[in-house]
Length: 128
Image (cartoon, rainbow, N blue to C red; front, side, top):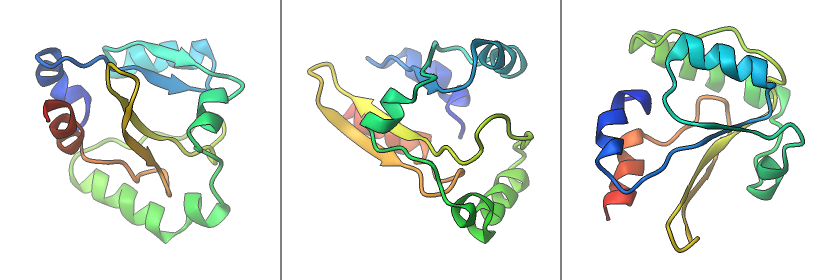
């Protein structure tokens, strides 16, 4: 399940979602228009949050190697459209879940571009 498919469940939880990107505001606007992304974006062109959470650039092997191709193939077999990359394809991301007290409950740094935790596992952490 993609995060957007869980939007209704997320609305029922004490959870705010925010995406962080280094892309320009124009790229973000186009992404939101095409995808219908319902949550706010924080544009971090200097990648300060990426650095703070140890989300660095991946190697050529990590980004273009067989693990990435296999991951993208699995997504396509599940019916996900894979779009052409834009910007710095070597910048890896991740997922961070911070509770209301400021404690980090999940800190997942991707090893390859398609290495993401399951949405349901993130929601289980919120529910716990």
